[in-house]
Amino acid sequence: MDEPFRSSPAASWASGAAGVAVSKAGAVGWMSAAEDKRALARSRDFLVASGLDPRALRGERPKKVIALINPQQKDVQDLVNLTRP
Image (cartoon, rainbow, N blue to C red):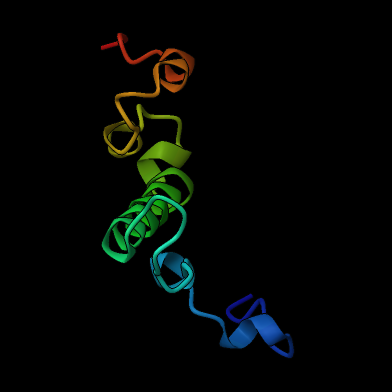
């Protein structure tokens, strides 16, 4: 029980937020390398906040996740009902 991944390749993988890796940033399409780096970091932060934050996993309002949503994405805002207290 203390080592659920013993004898598995997963035993050497990082856990928690350290286990969420993103690609190396670079200029892509209309984005500069700096913009891509920022987008990748925000995507990683979103994944950590939505999938690893114990409060969000318990069903509490995912404030960190909501704060990372692009305010220009009205359809996403509507989906998570940002008007709720």
